[in-house]
Length: 119
Image (tube, rainbow, N blue to C red):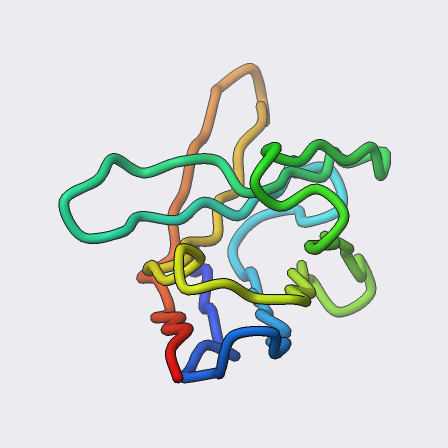
């Protein structure tokens, strides 16, 4: 059974920081491509950042220079460090794991963690 469990969300003032974590189980984490996505009320889910199994990273323009994605394969965990947060960063943040295993494509999602940026 695959599980992606996010944590670290909460309420933060504009300009503040949060660090999200996602612990994965049931997959071979080291070969998975991991990502963070977010969905604000009334909007579609959008990419925040991804990190490949080789450590390559990609960021949406909205988070470049403010967000950093990292992974710890020994702990089956992917992180999203978010700095200089803005009210428009308010959303539910979802962890994603995707890749191929035994020639089958997989695409798993966590349950999400709420991030609210407000004074």
